[in-house]
Length: 390
Image (cartoon, rainbow, N blue to C red; front, side, top):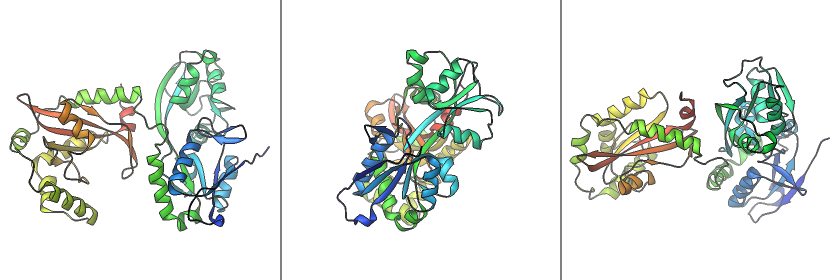
């Protein structure tokens, strides 16, 4: 039976009633849930927060996914959420920043990943179901909840289940499905909102404002969980054993004070980045011998490391594998923490809009004769981090 739920909230804004944004979604716990006749859930709350920030008026419509896709195509809905990038993005719709970061794992009795013909339990109309069909998996057994899928796996009726780690762990910790299963990381999945063709072409400024607001409201899953932290710590330990680069000690020891015109240098750097120009200072930093070595190390890591930069003990940029947005790094937590504690630092998980990657940053103190000379900072692609062989 087709269910339609209208939830209307009019917020103070400058738009007229005729410009009320039409939102569409489907029930998908814990992200979107119907409770006592209203729509709740983690992503529902996130979208509400974002819309509050931009002062929009909106109406919510609850439909099956096929209806959502049709109405978005026909401009009857303005925004639909929250979908895996492979579903609506492949149909040419403009997407928002990620609303959810999921870690998908294969769960099984024996470990490993399935062949295309192996039996897999999937939740009806789930993101995993759509993804697996698109990848050519055909032996899919449909159930109506993740709990039912895991029970089918435990009972031996199927060989695999593909699920978000967070959702699966909650169920596996319940006595109802308490069972030791093998888990192997498969991929990160981002769930986003998608905009209709008309909304995309006429509301570009509003979409940009909403994207900023959604990031401020903190997308779901953007936490440095124990597994991500553990892998980051292992990488930190490996990177901590890097020997000094050729010329590093001499270059860092030569800096004995903050540049008198630091504020001016930093502002010129930022403006030049915005204008697509390079100042003499930029060229000197980007092309020096230390930067050449950082670029070589970056390439050697094969995409795991997204950028590397080196600062002196005052936070001034000394070398970098690629152009940075700022010259002065001493006001960033990744540098401040190391300068104050003289210990490695791992940043919170964050979304880099320029690279469209989820990253952490690892910063390391650089010592010589027990004296702190500078800070070495690495950007790390979290998906690549999970693909490393244990």
